[in-house]
Length: 162
Image: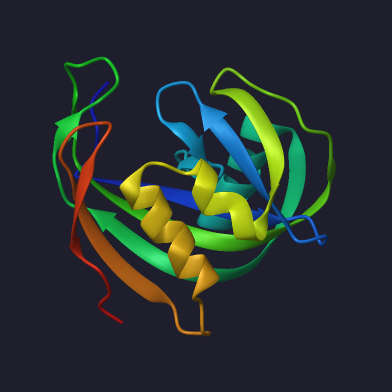
């Protein structure tokens, strides 16, 4: 697979209206909130709604943008061979509007976790940083940059720029 110069993706922090956040367990990355690469011809909103449904079975609608994140490292894809270029990610707060929890080809588990306990589940530093931006959101969109060292660790280079 040949990648473009930048990969564009979107993530959705899904609220259930009862103080819980949707988390999915990715096969290779542990617990995360749903999201992924935007497909050709797809806008960010449709992409995050699709990713949430695909990874968890939950139907969602987008509320607002909270962060723009750049991963400026070139690292290896899951195949260990293909170079992954700079990735630009847009994180949205979303509201659950239907569906039922279900796993997928990309996830082994999914669950609702109380908002105050989410950081106990998320172990990847970049995902933790992005979720903390949600917890600390003050109405201004955040910009973060980090550099992936390996698929299991990252070095957060710049905490905030906006």
